[in-house]
Image (cartoon, rainbow, N blue to C red; front, side):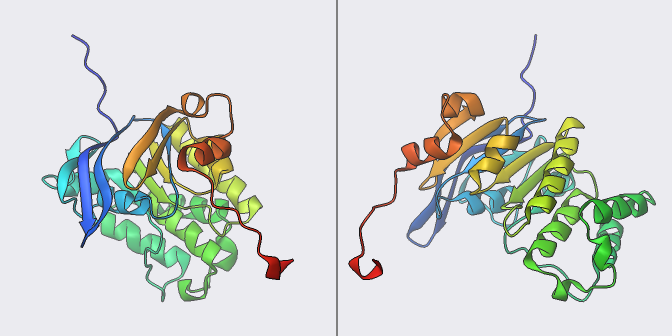
Length: 251
């Protein structure tokens, strides 16, 4: 008897409240293994809260989450081994260089000597080797994004969770990052990407979910969701356009 493959990430009825505000509401979502999956929605839709729960930084009030088949509550260590995480606002040790941070990460994760080559490769591709003696406290926002991605990739996780990885990234670096991520997916990895840059999602993702007010409002292959339109236009159609008003004092 054939059984469906285990999703790389499964959310089953997860809900998260902050006081009287429901940030995520009974959300069901399966991210297929080997997919490049986009998560989009307006500001305040619950995207970052959802990713933080997947990353085990927040616990859902109800429902369950599994990563690579491991329940994030009952099997947290197994889920964390399978995860590479780059979240918005994630703090980094600022008194280390990029290379020192990768060495620190490798030793924490118990990666064998291959971490040295991996570290050198990542620093070169992300052009951080040019700032080998620069402390992270002196990194630009874009450099912090890139070293955060390097940390997430170093142990070659099964699932990569990325929150706005292209924000503050210049076009040349963005192209390098897209190439790196496409290699990772081609090698069997799974990416769950949240971004407001619709062109990036459209160019890279094979499936996409749209959430609004913490609820799933559209999901499927990029072709199914957009139905021949652009993702940007589809997003506006689903979410609704912002109110337009002429401000005389600006004219």
